[in-house]
Length: 310
Figure 1: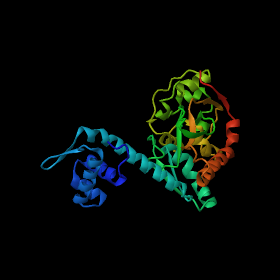
Figure 2: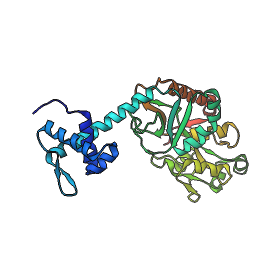
Figure 3: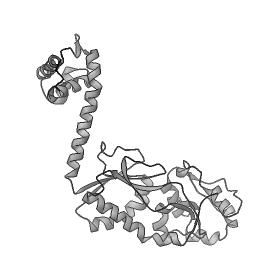
Figure 4: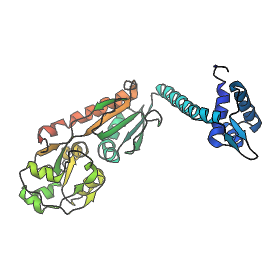
């Protein structure tokens, strides 16, 4: 039995036939005739010295040898496809595909993108607002911005600014509820998007940090942070705002934080890309721009008393 690898075209024909369990459908996928595909598979079987398919009347089935080969062949072609896409992306200096959660996209990225586009018209930005875990090489994504407290050693990971939460509200509501005690009667908004954090962080922990009892239990609850913030901006109530998502509204006065005690979170946002890709021109430009934008509002953090939750 030869240990020499068979021709790639024969393996490709086998992979397609094994996936479809049909020579006709595999031939259609590869844009060849069924006879040409059958010839490639026969040559592969001759190379192996054993059949790979049981030929039935109107169907085919894998033999034990075919079963042994099919999974590795599929994985091999997937690896080749991934490597080819990665090689193609190294030649692309104009397109940048970014994935970030819907809240970060809406509240941090979108309001600032005009400035980035004006400064870098040569870069075409593409966005996927999603919390889905992505394989950056397989999914053709250049940069992921994710919120969490787990490390990703297989990726280049740059932690962004330290995160905190603080009560934010419109100036009108701030005038109506000027003290911590008055917040007991204020309309409270609950942002459940950080309920996964451990240790927990939320209204009970904030009131505890203020040495005040926590009694509000009623109020609208939102599973998406940007929806909770939109409600606060509309004057519906007071919400615990996360730094990255409220910092621009605080800087521009749409929201205020009249109680300067903020709680640190056990998680934060990170800038992620494939290792070795962090210095690609458009990725490096985008990373440096994000860091510069964060620095513009860093002074707001300095006005807060940031403490760890008990």
